[in-house]
Length: 132
Image (cartoon, rainbow, N blue to C red; front, side, top):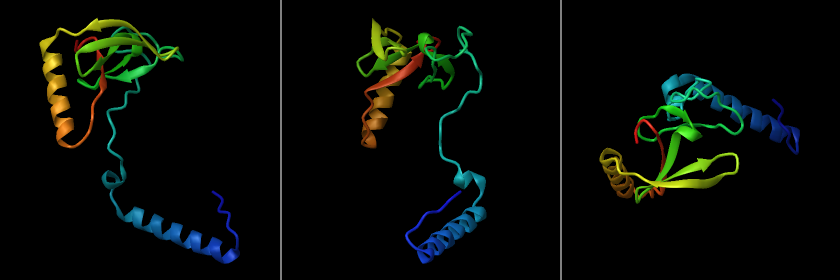
């Protein structure tokens, strides 16, 4: 770790402030320091088709069940119920389908309603084939 500054005094001030921040962080519990993130999967392969993740087979997380799957075993679903298979190697949509699963459509409607209540906009989510 290196600190560069215009003067020795400025460098001492930076190091002093950093030390104060470190001392304050040590007083906090780990749960206060941890950022809220989704469940991270360490499994090196898709939970549906068992394909190993590679450059062109990405790991994605289902927005409905939080399971990890590959980009081929999940669809990008928009707020109208249109679903697209996304080719992650070329980053383009292909193979458009329509979602008819009432549970997924109801879940999407509730999710959009909740997002609108807090001022967010949900355009699309990633859903695995198990949830579809």
